[in-house]
Length: 412
Image (spheres, one colour):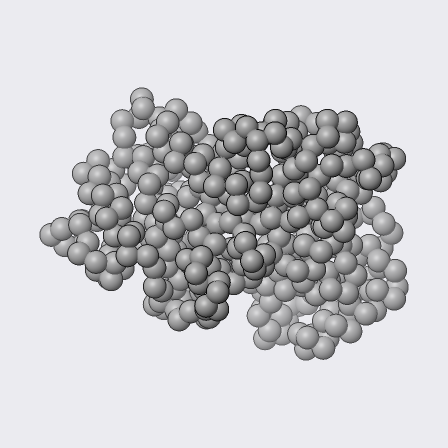
């Protein structure tokens, strides 16, 4: 995958520091040859091994509590966060003041790209737990001169009132929760016309880059602009929405060296072909990841106007490799089902059940829609996927709502 040649000096500086002072990577790099300083980006890709989450988890279990992926002396670290644990055991992640500030700067860039300006009032509608992104976004917004409201410890009804009564102009949460909060405003008889929200910053789910979900969100919030991005605790903020193509995500090139590989052969894929995103953190030296297999499925965009922005991922994050299901020989990602549902019935809440007790796995869907909408969805899935997926209409408000990443898929 072509990438900016300017990454090489930053990559060489990172590897020099990490090879000398980071025990985890010092051990991994014993096999790279005489020099830990790659002569080129191709040399780096050829000689340096991938890093997996399983390795990092094993390292922390063997060296509790923080593991050995630390480039600086332990007393210099000032922040501890952790992953959500949705794809395995949670990882603790430490940062020094310097590595933290690198990520705050990147988050500020995301917010600027979203259109935030000094004086905006932003509600962070989630509980401030141990996860990295919430705290970074809050601090970055403060540095931009925004008035920040922390939504931790509040019910959805309380957040809705904070949003309206304080004239918040920006809402930051998952796409699912933004839809839910719009419902709460209506349920609490808070006039949505009083909402001053002009930007919704969403992440944590693929929906922010799906046209149907974006339209449903904008409709629910009086035409507000929808802005997508993504990141991970292990790497920090990674992308922001393309300014002219809102269903694409742009890599923060100054902070990352990115590769896209075939998930089985690990060979680079061609632009336009789907593959697994691999990231190296160029500036988060205190707690780096090098050639980290993220598990995210992406496609590098090839349109000329899009490529002018640098490395661009077409359609955003298409899904996670470990989320893919094989149903009667058909490969299915949850984001594909999301898109079909949004096209047929809009922003209706739903739940998908995967029955694994049969020799051939089966899907079924419950959806808060009328019988006509459910039937139309069945027909669309049959036509587009070649699968019969039973769709059952259920009463509005009967399915679970989610504050963080929605868990609409369940296995039985």
